[in-house]
Structure formats: C-alpha cells, structure tokens
Amino acid sequence: MDIQAIEEHVAGILAAIGENPEREGLRETPRRVAKMLEEVLEGIAYSNHDIAQMFGKTFESVGSQDVDTAVVMKDITVFSFCEHHFALMYDMKVNVAYIPRGKVLGLSKIARICDMAAKRLQLQERLGSDIAEIIAEAADTPDVGVAIVGSHSCMTARGIRNVNAQTVTTTFRGRFREDADLKALVKFD
Image (cartoon, rainbow, N blue to C red):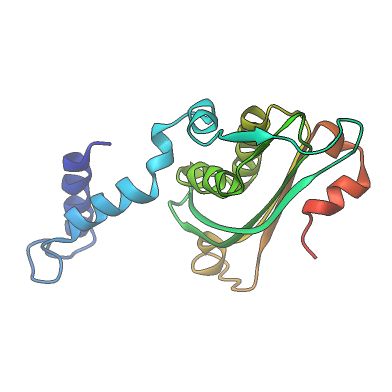
C-alpha cells in the first residue's frame, strides 16, 4: 500500500471539500487516515489462497469417518468497507459451518479467516463467497456454509437513511446446498 500517495490524496480531498489541510485539527489527518486504511484494508494484500495458507492450521478430526460431524461457529464480528461508496459495513456477524474430512481447523483460525477476508473493499455477497472458499481450502472440505448479517452505512447514513436496514447473505457449498438441516446450522434466528 502506498501510504505517501494516500496522504497526498487525503490532503487533496480535504482541500476539495473546502477545508484547510494545514489547520490545527487536520494537519495530521492525512497520515492518520493512511495508517487507518493500511490497517483496515490489510486483506487486499492477500489472495484467498494466501489467507487459507496463513490460517490453515488443522488438527486430526475426532471420531469415525462414518459419523456426520459439523463444526459451527456463530456470531463472528467483522466490519468491512463497501467498494461502491467506500462506506463502512458494520455490526456484521458471520456464521460459519463446515463438515470435516479428516481434519478440523483451529477455532481461532475460523475467526481470523473471516476477519482477514473482510479487510478488503467488499460486497457482502463476495465476502461470504470468499470466506467459504478459504474455509473449504484450509479445512480441505467442499462442504461449507456461511451466513452474514450486517448494516451498511451507504444505506443507513446516506441515501435513503434507513437506519434499521440489515442485509443478510448466505453462501452454501457442497452438501450445504441441498440439505435444509445443514443450512439451518448457519442461518440467523
């Protein structure tokens, strides 16, 4: 990420909206914004494959291969930025479920995968698809379900300003596509 270029552009935006980038309260704003963007958009630097490799720590699955077992993690908190308006996507909760095929992911890795995938300019639908792709690769299973609910400031703080609007998206792969019981594991109440 080109921090210096971001600083220059932020200073230009401040000037373009009629502010003085050199006034006391704004003097350090371009640097602060650049550092903030470097942090909250860290995931841009990594492909889905890279993230699967970074957080793909697995353990041998417990139990017989003949027994259906699902790993479910709910209410993973993330935030992201809408690629259309650069607006914050907030109060986002991610539910993830997968069926292990001989190995399971470390639980913290599931949350880390969701967090890193969200640190990109994003569409909520793509975020769910990316998380499912990364979990499938990291856990070496085709059977993954992801549900996301969140608020988008492009809906709540501008435009229509509907403060209660939430967006729910689901992504189902493998057995989750056809099995209503598996889908129910990730859906929000």
